[in-house]
Image (cartoon, rainbow, N blue to C red; front, top):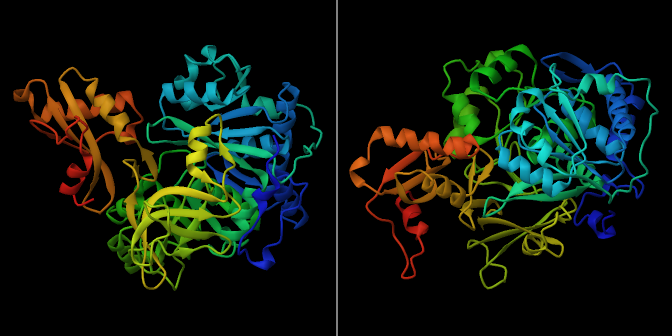
Length: 532
């Protein structure tokens, strides 16, 4: 599949950025650039296994691409990557791209049903899965008719090939597929208003363009930086933070395969001279509240970025007071691949999401389909060269989101008198929790499947850090059974049904729920109680 030439148009882009060549393969380009710059022996990645140089990374990528071709996987066919953040992640992702095969990295926190859908929807020929995640796939592998090969990253093969054995074969041919800048390179799944994942299709050029437009000129990454991202590589945000941007300048990235905790990140900051840090508001708040957080003298931070949800002003100010480094809040979407609206060091206006990144154009639209005046709330639209081409196999949602050159983001914003954009929440009922979308309908369905629940409504609610979390209003079949023990039981019930981060942090029992004359739940009335 080849994308339209207009995909690489660059409105308002800096002239120095230059156009992406027509014949282009991101993996081959970024690896060759680093080797030509004499970085073969420089660390590209550090993980729990050790240090991996740019030369070693290039060799692993070539070997993985050759292994896929040896398995008979052809250009444009899909490989599903369910991997934790180790050296195997960039190896597999770049290996796919270099061979012209489409990488489909997926969230490692999802359920068996989510993965079943993604395997079927992508028609993946190969699954590359971390050993720790294998149990979620074990039952569904045989149910995926297009799946022909399974590769396990770890030490136990579970009856399939091990990743290290696959790349440890004979010396591979250094093959690069003859891709163009508009060729389909990878997909990223994102949830919709029903919670059903949608595969956003991205091309080779978009990776380079996010680095050219944001990573280097705005984030200011350079070769001497040591980078760490709390957001994992499977996120669009994490992919740029821990792969596209550092590799584009020859920096070093520290990976963490475990779920990020304040103590875990504190240990990394003490162990490594991390200079560029990417987090999300929930993590910054938890980190500041941790008694084990490092002191200013123990860290080397010079640049910090936040995205995923609006950064509370109080959290940003507390971080600056403690570490003397500004946290720049930004907005990016899976559909646009990375940040296109952001604050900048020295120009931060706390409580806003900043201004547009050069190369992108932003407008706010009213319900009448017309731009709103400055100072009035409207729905955010963005135009820029890194937009996804479509949602795979979903014309209806593609048409709703991708409006010609403009992408509809689904967020409500106000542009203030200084030209900074202020977030006013989602345009629909979707919630963004720790940078991940949560469908209230999905959580409601999980709650309603409990034998004690008559009906439920889920809305976003501010916690004490002014961050959004799900809150459930529940009507029981037998009101007298409302107890704290039942609250905990319902929360555990949702965790068993859905990805754990989707569970309601609070549950409030009600006699009834506000409804319209036709019986529809009026969630806006419940949200109003929390001033969200």
